[in-house]
Structure formats: structure tokens, C-alpha cells
Length: 99
Image 1 (tube, one colour):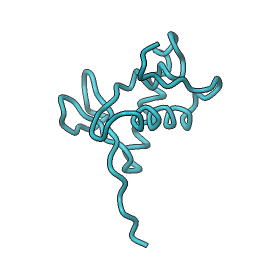
Image 2: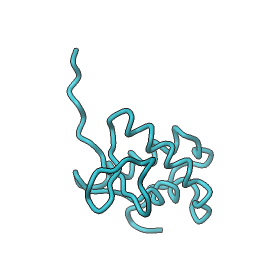
Image 3: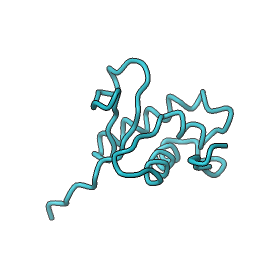
């Protein structure tokens, strides 16, 4: 297992678990740095990560909608639903609340 990996507890391969894996991996990176969605899938499923890729993409989609992350390709923001080829996930700075 690589040094950057975050191992999630067994049974956390659901949408909320995938979101936690994405956010945990991003929290371990320097600001502005990215992760590959497969890193989150590996944190959830180890070597059997491939079937979890759709779940991780769904989790990323919700985190994008919540304004917590963005999806990039070659350093540019892209739409997850129209992006082709490899994508990366990057944390967004917290937005000030309008209380």
C-alpha cells in the first residue's frame, strides 16, 4: 500500500463512505493538490477497487454539488458528467456562510 493511502473500515463502501474516503485523502494533501478517484476506491476496496469506481464518481458528484470539491483534467475544471479520460479531484476552500 502506498504511503498516501487511507484505509477505510470494512463496510464503508457506500456513498457516505466514499465521500469520507475522498475527503480524507484530500485532507492529507497540500492545498490545491489532487487525488485520482481510484485512490478513494482503493481505500474502500483494496485490490478489488474497480467495481467501486462508479460509487466513488457518484460520491464525487455530490461533493461537487455541495461545493466541497472540483473535478479537473490537465489542471482545468471540468464537468464530471461530460469529462472523458482521466479526471482528478481537488478540494475547494470552505465557503463563508451567509449567516
